[in-house]
Image 1 (cartoon, rainbow, N blue to C red):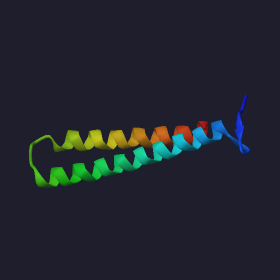
Image 2 (tube, one colour):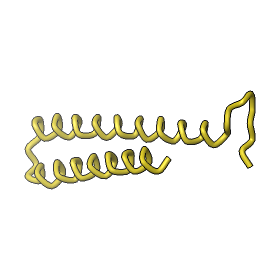
Image 3 (cartoon, rainbow, N blue to C red):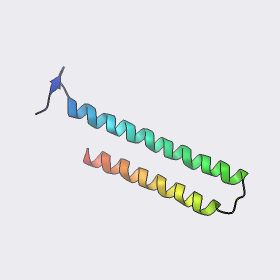
Length: 73
């Protein structure tokens, strides 16, 4: 049962909201990558490579989740 309020489906609103939230999370992941680059260029702690790799893995999963949601929803 799709409830219509002023001719707009509730499920359509929920789907758009989910895509907007996932898009904002994708932007957050890009900010995290930028912060990792700034920190690793400033500090030399010896584990820059694993932290950078984790940041890019996190970004890749965020992109995959966004694309999956775009296809599924």
